Every structure is written in structure tokens, then in C-alpha cells.
Image 1 (cartoon, helix red, strand yellow):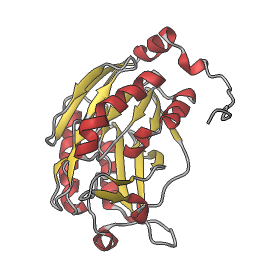
Image 2 (cartoon, helix red, strand yellow):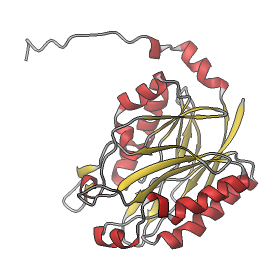
Image 3 (cartoon, one colour):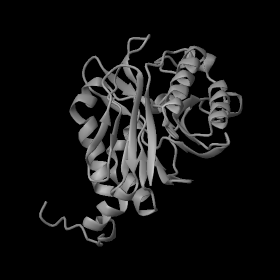
Length: 278
């Protein structure tokens, strides 16, 4: 079975209303070129450092215009659409948002949703630090979504560094792992491709990673380089650092072939930790 997928790369601003028509245009471009599975990056609707600004412009899931519009587009085009994630207001008493991914079916229905589990709380340098957990409430559930072409494991950005999540999704039946992201430039240059290839090799899954790119209107820079990797770790397609659409044709038979060669998902063994020599 062959599937044509499209990875949409965006340079989202801090204005959801302005980002929406750009995203929709790329989705339509992807469909016109034959893609039946289209993926957008993390925080498709907004990139902002300002908590107060986000409080002013973000909506709850039932009221979010980006989600509502893209559901209609998926229905119109009869495509599977992964909205990599949206920043949304939540019911949390502390006022934190959620970073939520949506898999939309060809009928426009929400087939699955996933809240980012791992928060990006890091100090990259004296001038670059992130404390995602101050703004976003982490999720606590791994999500495997059924489609008519196989099961998709949902992850978001920093989740990429936690191999056990991806292994659990693969052992539960995922043949594709989605890894939408807004990677920083320093970590992207050092780790983006090697981590994604590792997740593909470890699990025998396709890995599809649409990304934010370029310099955003608030000065933040993201790495881009949206990428598709096969279950043997081969890079099938990769963008550079400009907004656009990257296409890839997936031979889904490669999942079974890779796992037959190296059936590591069936070779787990229990072990004890010996700390007597510390």
C-alpha cells in the first residue's frame, strides 16, 4: 500500500487569524498534488512568548476558529489531516494552556487528540531559555489513532527525546509516528535528524515530522527541516528552512519488512539494576 503524505512547514506569527489562511492554502496545495494525508507543525495557530497576549487571542477547543475551519477543509477535500498542535485555553485552575494535536478524518470529525506530555523547560544559553510548563499544562495519556491506512502514534516536539513513549506506541500497533515540532535552531542543528532517525530505527515505524521554520514576527527562530523517514532509518524527503510543502510517498509494506529483519519490539527482557558498584 502506498500513501502520499504532505508535510507543511510554517512560519507562524502571533496572530491566529493571520496564520489560518496561510495554513489552509498549503493544505489545499498539498491536496491538489495528490496528498491524502497532510500534516502541519506544532503550534500551527500561534507562536508567542507572551502569556498575556495568548490570554487575549487564544480560545478554548469548542470556540477555536482554526480548528473549526480546518475540520471543514478536511471534510471538503476528504483527506486525513494532522493539525500538529494548537495552543488552546484550558479549564486548568492555574490558567495554563494546552498544546494539543488533532487528527481530523476525511469527514471532518476529530478522530483523535493528544496533549503534549513532555514540557520544554531548558536553558540553552545565557540568552536563550524556555519554560514551557509555565504556560502549558502537560498531558498524561499516550494516543494511538486508527486510520484507513494504519495506526498513527501522536507525539509533539520535545516528546522526541523520550524513546520509551515511541516504543510504547509502536508496540501498541503504530506504523507511523507523527512528530510535529517547533525546534530551536541550536538543538535542531545538533539533534533533529539524528533523533528522528533513531526513533524510526528503534520502532520500525515511518516518522513524519512537519516543523515551524525561520524567523517569526516576535523574533523567535525555529529550525525547520521538516522530514520524512522510513522504518529502516532512511531519509525519504526533507525541507530546508522556508515555509512550504514537502511531499513523500510511503510504501507501508516497509514497516513489516523492517520489523521482520530486526524484530526488536519482541525482544524485551526484564532486568534488575545493580548499584553495588557505585
